[in-house]
Length: 328
Image 1 (cartoon, rainbow, N blue to C red):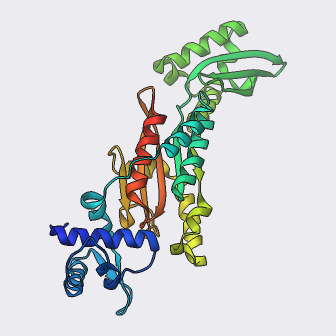
Image 2 (image 1 turned 60 degrees about the vertical axis):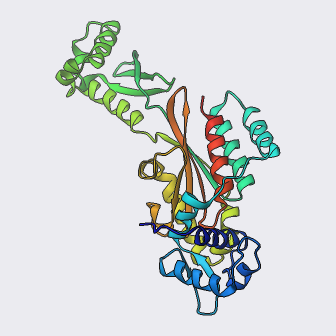
Image 3 (image 1 turned 135 degrees about the horizontal axis):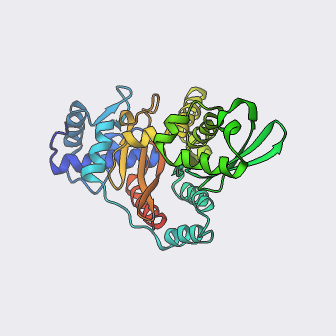
């Protein structure tokens, strides 16, 4: 639960968060007292910092060190203190130029969008694209060998799967008067679930079913990821253990991105901080994400993955802007 803060404490918390974002170093009361934003004594600043720490917004690593934000402090900063930065003309021009030079090829567009956004933000950008599940379009059968038939299973995305079928193992093949009749009968069986249930034990039908199931259960998510070197260059990840943790958990995100997308907030732009991310060992990270749509259908997500001290005021409008540009 977020405790209501006075305007002075909100200002002070904002200063701690923004100073820590800029420097990655604990923020001392002496540093804060030099700011023109607060016209109070150093003693008052120290008392307010102690209150913010007691309420769980900030903490300090050592008795003599300055303060750093806690997850609660970051969350309150994003929800109640932060001001979004306006995108510069150069940023808009760069993004639009890079994205629209490959207009028409969605995969190339997503790849260059991830690269461009990562270079501007300085963190990992991961863009997902859901693939349509392939649907059966047609089945073609050819008598090519004395003991074998060639079966072509054609899907609506243009994929064609081939299989040689032993004639002697299928009663449908044995009882068919000719290839054309067999082809028509097999297509009718796969158009009607009642027929399919009746013949699903036949070797020919079972073989075709296995082809269809193998195609429709294939990976239905594409991943475009950029910026890993930028992320591990951050001071939070300077140790070998933290770098290995990032690599391992990014692999988890890549292969479980659909599950993670479902668990993240479905707002236009979602901000998940620390333990809000459903991935172990991501307590030092934040994810800012947004969905995008193609032809009115939600197609995937844009995720910016970075340290909790990322520039939320800059990243949030950038993610929203890219989401709007990708959607049509």
